[in-house]
Amino acid sequence: MEKPPRLLLSRLWLQNRVYDVTLNSVVFAWKETEPNKKRPPGSNWNTCKAAGSHSVPVCEIVTVQETAEEGQKKNVGKWHRVPRSPEESYQPPAFTVFYVDRSRLHRWRCRSVTFHCPDWGLCQQWIQTIEEQLFLLTYRPKRLLVYINPFGGKQQGKRIYDQKVAPIFSRASIFTDVIVTERANHARDHLKTDADLKKYDGVVCVGGDGMFSEIVHGLISRTQCDSGVDQNCPEETLVPCDIRIGIIPAGSTDCICYATVGANDPVTSALHIIVGDSQPIDVCSVHHNNTFLRYSVSLLGYGFYGDLLIDSERKRWMGPTRYDISGAKTFLSHHYYEGTVSFLPVTDNVGSPRDKFRCRSGCHVCQHSGHIPLEEKQICEQEEEEGEDSVSEIGHKDVWRVIRGKFLAINAVSMSCACPRSPKGLSPAAHLSDGTTDLILVHKCSRVNFLRHLLRHTNKKDQFDHSFVEVHRVRRFRFMPKHQEVDSGVDSEPDLRERGKGLFGQICRDHPACDCAPAHSTWSCDGETLPHTAIQVSAHRQLIKLFARGIEEQPVFEDSTGACSA
Image 1 (cartoon, helix red, strand yellow):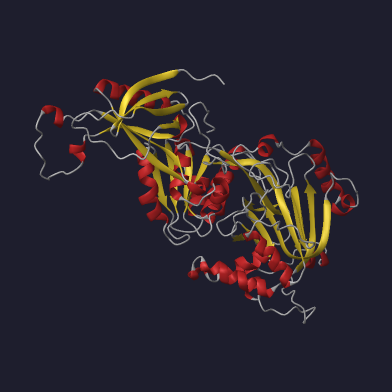
Image 2 (tube, one colour):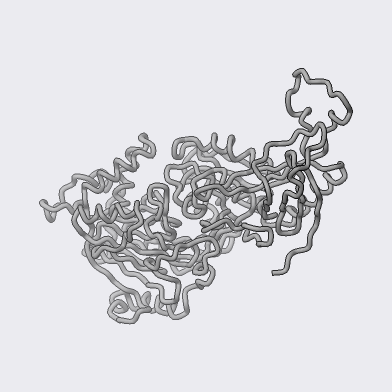
């Protein structure tokens, strides 16, 4: 690879040592040249951990600033020793470069290094040249619309933004318009109707996964409305959103941030936003007949996770602890639910849920996965015209497959759903932007076996290596609960609030001695309940973009000749 032309090369002072400092369009680097050289009289250097040779990608420089003299910013109003000579009182001109520094566990920090120059002209030349290179990074945001949820998680959203994020945005010269939400769906409604999105380069949410879901629904609905797309039609091809979304984690689990960045850290997420990273994300649309219900980005769960959500909603006053208590209660209830799952499996080469290939930054599976092939679209149309039963009898791999049975859990995940408590997530090999979702079916089994399956979410063992668990990579799927099959397709679902009242401890009318009560569960869609149990789901490839780059296997930059992947 041919090296880019050098823009600047100077011999500057860092602490009490001399460095050769170079800049080109790709990298900013400094290398120690005279270890024994003493600092000039009167110089007072900043403390920098760096020593030897170092390099920073230009695309990961946050900003550059002229450094004020130490006497102007320290010890104001205090007694000072009178310098013995003019040389001793001289403060050499200096500039400070703020840049991204990678630390352990995928966390980023904003570090700084200050160089002292022999004259003001050279100092201004360095500042101007670095600013010109940063100006050429047009993918960086300059103005952001920020929504803060003050009630999510531990109710620390506003404090996290004010103390950890806003100062970094200000240092990077990013202008922000901040809205503190006052009610549920405040951000969604504002994005759908009132927000002037043309003014902004991105939308940032400060909160948990629920707040992110609000932003997603607002942006996607706004985009489809502006494009004349009918969201109630399950067969519609949705228009991708142009504006990127940033997530500042301040919720209970923050699994979306964890799965796309690798850490639930506000500073790390803020730096990803500043450098202008972009990561496409798949979104699933959920319909009941010809009625749009919701969009799902992470987990769509029926059975265990649906019951857990219903119970945990009654315990919101407990904070994040409610998930532990509701999880134990749901596990002990051990309810299973009968129904029919039909799905359209993936036929092109986009990997398998059990192939052990994790989705990482620059994932080749996501880059080479196309849209639904023409044959599958034709099969979908044939299925719609002929009915599901006639198609399900055909043994060809491209047609819809049908599975009837009793399920403890039915989960569909469009990403790994990893979080600190489950580092691998529900489906470790799920991909962020391949246009598919991983459908996980947990059939009825004993409590001990189900516990073994749940425990594998927290360790490195294969969580699908059980006879009662099957997983499929699909583009579309449907679910019909047994009670609606008996009713011959008539939707007789009781009100969701009535279902929730007797969810635990209710006795099954048909089988008083069994543990399958109640007759059906509810769907948990990214932490929100759905009003219907009979649903159809379609995966839409790369419908939104995040200020992220996926989880990195190793640092992007290791030497001064590499290229920036941002």
